[in-house]
Length: 342
Image (cartoon, rainbow, N blue to C red; front, side, top):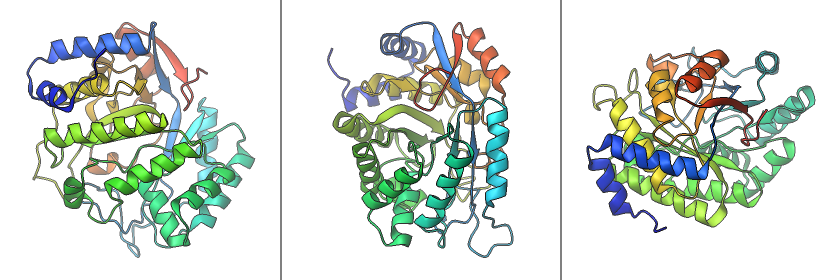
């Protein structure tokens, strides 16, 4: 089968053939992930700090160092949050925070070791590529050394956060002080080399063009050809409320979201799993996404603070996701971070 070109992907994104593109994406989904199952995970986002020196224009969550609203979670609070997750049947945690100027690698090593001592079976799916770059700089280490030490301390896999749009002209507009495209890709390449698998994301609907979205998918596909280290791709739509971009962009519609998701399934032929982002689009659109190329409904989101900071708060528990998957015509199955079934 011939591979979709960037030009073809762009033509599909520009087209109005939503149902046709969705049907094609669903056919590919059935080939790559055959069977009646649609998966989800019970895990928790733990934002260990909101202090960040990056100051991204799209983020309503961060606080500057010294802000009266700034925080760093204590070990006791983090342990309690993980215990609550385990009690709800959770299997993993995703720890992400801001680029804190005073948290070096020893802080994370001590934390990850403690977590593994408290909860030996929990998966630590944590820290975005920009956080890895920042921790390395603060600690005077290379990213390779940083990843190796974090892996030894208990880091299991790397989420795809901080990618936004992997086009530097876009990044200069929305996140000028964050890791560049090449730095993001380099962290992921090194992580995969060290056996730290992960996911890739795309935040669309800010200032980028459709060509930028395709370019983002192109560099992800190329890196996946090289390493095979991405388990899933997760496109999600930008929410501008309370951010530096509020009022300057039009929110991505459900149609835009479904079309982008479907094209990502068709273009990213080397990534097995495509995850629906119900947190930004709502559970109904997430449900429809299972017929537009997605095979996974993501997390129950026991806790979510970053999107909620924009004023959008959508919640769902395990039963909600199970019901949504069944109503979409699939058999729900709880998975772990590595997509093995619970």
